[in-house]
Length: 115
Length: 115
Image (cartoon, rainbow over all chains, first blue to last red; front, side):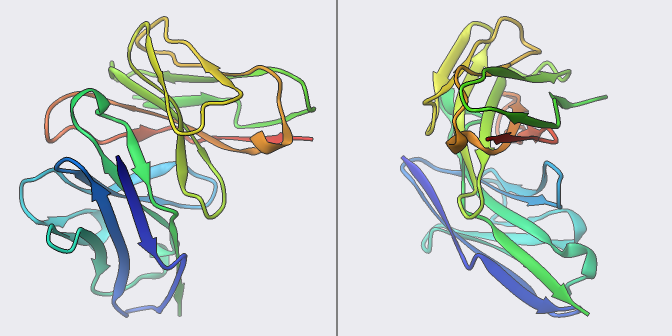
C-alpha cells in the first residue's frame, strides 16, 4: 500500500523568496516519486520525477527535489519564487510491476506568490 | 501530437442520467487511468487499465464503469449520476518503458456537475 502526505494545504511566499513544499510518502516497495503542477482550469504537468537514479532531482522552471529515504520525504524547493509559480502542486507516488502508471496523490498544496 | 484528449470539457447532468466521458491518447501507451479531483482530496484513482481488454478498480470505483477495447480509447461511464459525482475528472496515460518512463500524461479534464 502507498500513501502521500503533503504538509500544508496553502503556502504563501513573497516573490524572490525560497519555496519549500513538503511531501512525505509511505510505500512497501522502492517508490517512484513525482511532483506535478496544476495551473487554474488545466490538467497536471510533470515538474520532476525520482526513479532511483540521483537522489537530488532537477525539474523544469528551476524546481528541484531531494529524495531522503531515511525521512521518507521528497520535498520540493525553488530558490527564488516567481509570480508565475502560483499554482497547485501535487506530490505522487507510483508503484512498479503491474501497477506502472497507477499513482497515489497527496492532497495538494496551493502556492501563492505575493509581489 | 495531441497527447491525451478528453471530451467534453464541461457537462451538467441531472440526477439519474447516464453519460460517457471520452478519453483518447495517441502515444501508443499501454496504461490508462481515470482520476477524480475534489478540493482538499487530491486526485483519486477510479479505474485503471494496463492494456486493451484489461481493466481494474482503483480507490473509488463505485458508480463508474470502464472498458478498453482499443489501446487508444478508455471511456468512463456513469450509469446513474449522483450529486456526489460532481467533480473534475482526469484521464491519464503512461508507458511501461522502464525506470525513466513512468511519467503519466494528463488530459485537460472534464468538469462535471450533477444537479
